Length: 84
Image (cartoon, rainbow, N blue to C red):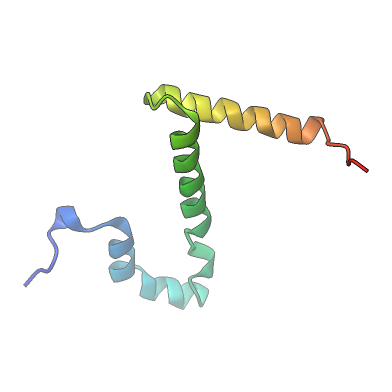
C-alpha cells in the first residue's frame, strides 16, 4: 500500500527515504547538508517582495536585486560615522 502518490512526494521526503542512510555512512552526520541558510534567504526575499515591490513577476525580482545591490554598495563604500 502506497501512502503518497508520486506527484505528492516532496524532494525532502525523497531524500529522507532514499539517501539519508548512505549520507550518514559517508559523512557521519547531516549538518553539512542543512538547508537552514537557503530557508532564511527565502524568508528574507519573501519579506522584501511584499514590502518593497509592485508585485509584478520578473520586475519584482529585478527591484529586489537592484535594491540589495544599492544597499551592499553603500555598506562597502560609504562607511557610517559614529555620532558623539
